[in-house]
Length: 96
Image 1 (tube, rainbow, N blue to C red):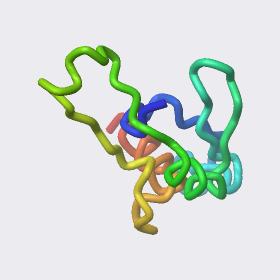
Image 2: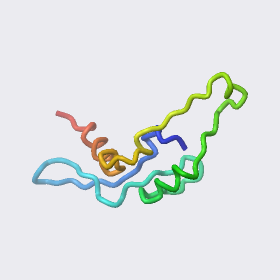
Image 3: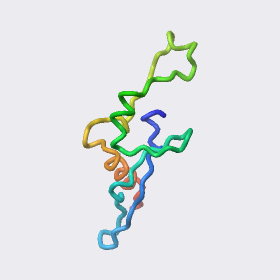
């Protein structure tokens, strides 16, 4: 699965009545495989990155267009943890 497909990141949220906003329920973040439905937790990230491989959608074009993407879900930076990404998704959905 591509690490740029942010819609594969699933999580639960809880509503804080006092702050009138939703927060990610810590520990519920998971990356769901679109083919088999397996739910990867963030602790699996390093293994997935080191054992994954680039699969070109049109192999005959590899020599001509060998491009690839690496998205935020593959980042090792703490600021781009799956919990932070999920929280930003919730923030982006706010209606003011």
